[in-house]
Image 1 (tube, rainbow, N blue to C red):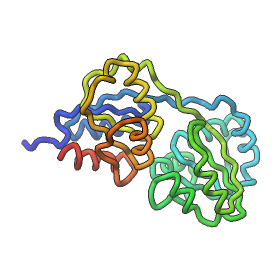
Image 2: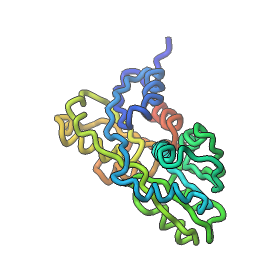
Image 3: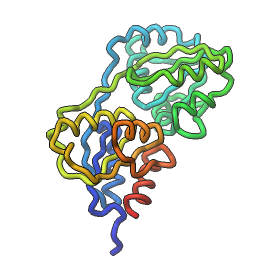
Image 4: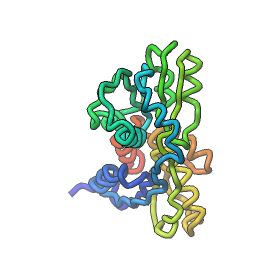
Length: 250
């Protein structure tokens, strides 16, 4: 019987459990041992004020732009509280990638645009017909303002709302045992894991591999002092698993 490509590898998954199950299943299928250790958790925003204002005037916008499935979830959960849900949205809808588009589809919404690469910067650079148009960005409280700045330079009238926030799961420091590799799926997971490492005996460990879902996450990981062993060419769970097999398996 042939050896599975990830056999013997203990791989830490740092994304929240609701997003990590699919990745864990694929790693296990390929012979690896997934260690689900969420470095972060997704929480409601500190205030709903700006989100509520945007929900009450959605028809003012030409584009609704979502950069994560979490943003979709919190946006529409709040919409159900404020307006009993959303029907007849006039604006076109953009998603950063397939997972976000899938989340939107679950609410019965058609995505009009996905960028050529699943990166927020590309989304801001490639979103069509934005000059003079009103654009609503749905983001995390932890996200930077780069997208809004790019769209503003392109002539868009941008409102940016913070639909959720990301919190570090420091209590997971006590659960971190032996591992061979760690996967980061966002800059937040890299920052969270760094704090977890510094709160546990594992910070002394060296030699583990770091794999990232995309270049933005890889850059954040490197700025935190991690040495990145591989970056997924396609910034999805499937692309991440393919890269794992090629780099770690090889």
